[in-house]
Length: 194
Image (tube, rainbow, N blue to C red; front, side):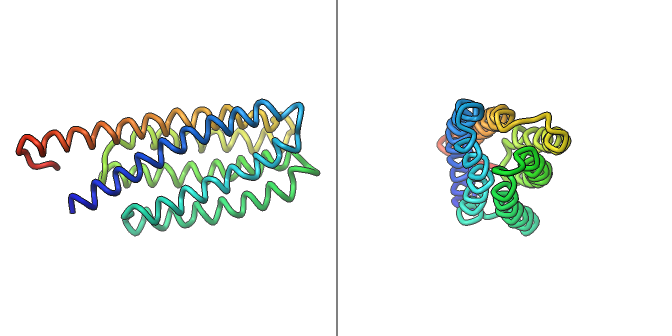
């Protein structure tokens, strides 16, 4: 049971830290290309939900989620694939619609992340940053839908979204690292970890 906890917590921590790095690089790419190389930014916009799908699949394979957490992750992966397809179909001809599609995905993914964070808080602890991230993603998603449909938002606006996500993932990774360290220290001193 302890090994399962440690494996799940370490895997999740590593995933959060890798996601932090990716999102910073992705945001830099979008911000630097959105106005000067819109086709490159468009491809990056398509890749973002696919990256999220890859992370979700990795998480499903390396952690031991509860049935409800597993269901929310599977739904998130399906939404990510549909979003990448929706963005690909709109980004080159109706870029504003692609922002709205991205927003609808951010809204749905944010709600699912909020649910997963609440479930994992009981399992692993150290999830308040993911809960906040889910709430913020939900709010940002609503703004992106309306901003995209009205033509007021651009691919460059997604860069800020990714940076905030990176901050939350970094905090989540640090919190899980601290929890693992405290439990390891307690076990080393002969205490039973809970």
